[in-house]
Image (cartoon, rainbow, N blue to C red; front, side):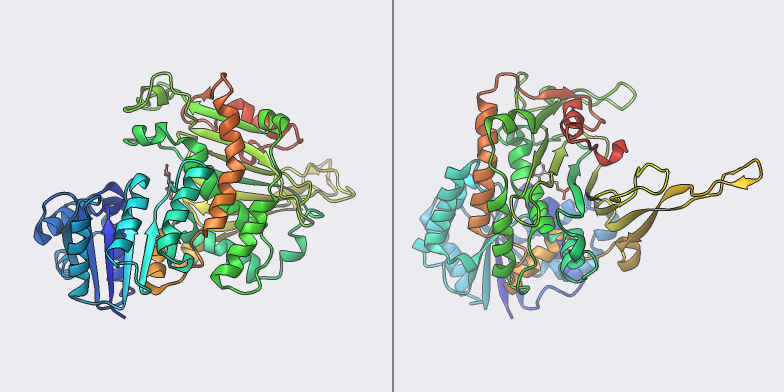
Length: 488
Ligand code: BG6
């Protein structure tokens, strides 16, 4: 199957950091279908060779194990081309059409890795040039809008030009092996299914913590914030994967229908829950012994009086028969205590205690997403005998854990998120992409939080870099009698 992959934003940050390295990995692993061509599109007047040289230079910044040798790069470079385009100019789309016609590939992928303001223009101009043929797929990178109305406007513009089944909305978390493992855990095994419900689960905690700050993205982040950047998409997709009903089969729409139902079942916000169940924070400077970490307000591109949140913790519920009353806590932030994404499923305590012990860390399943990918099952076992006065203490329970490390089991060189998603686009698999109705429902649910914050003059709470966020986040969960996993 021959393909042309047109990369709008071909000289942008995403192309350098993620897409080109992922395409190279697919090429190196032999999983990129033969007969492919990658056309980077940008405004600069580069020759094909100049573009290839720029890409080669950028590869010096990726992990050493993922860098091509000279020979590998020469072979990879043979499928790379560059096309200069001003995306607002119809004539430039005519040149694109000509470039594509020359090969007439079986599949054409239009990957729009540009500022979202250009999504609508690109779609309209592709259609006006007749480039929205049945064998064309379009890939859109987040953020798709900044609220429900702007998201809808983009989706409407795109869907006037392409059928929903031609649209691949990327949420790169869905491409992570750990997230696919979550589907495997739930729907490939029957062990946990009978327990996966309100009768047995006390609460579920989803944490996506990053240790880095906003780096060079201050300008972007100022108009985005953690709620739009991480909660509306990545965290809610994880919540869907944890909370959804088993789909009737593994087809894209069967999976997406079930995720949509979860989003529709999220407990609606009230004035009271908005004030009590959502915490926003912003990082302050790091402790002096921890390098020279700037406060968010001092980062380049950030307003010194900024109220943009770099941390969100919230509590919600899925109002359906399986989950009614079970709190789901979501927490994400920058400059936290470490890079750590995991989901903790806390099971209910035994109904009647016959042992004299605290539950502590037991009775929980931890799904590690990154940096490690694995599962930990925390249980109580008979611990070391505590011999006092010659007699063994009767039952001395201690927490133990079963630890499954998927990186060790399957190798940490598994297919990365972008590599997987790019291959899925080329091969037309929609399972790991977000449908427009899912995306709109997620925006509908986060929008009351955005509105509430817009009218709340107190702004985000400051937290010290290198911590787990503002103390209000612990206080929020403590109200239910629980604590975050690291506080156990
Ligand atoms: C992106 C956000 O979608 O995800 C970034 O825009 C964030 O702000 C990134 O850093 C996190 O992704 P990962 O794969 O490093 O966890």
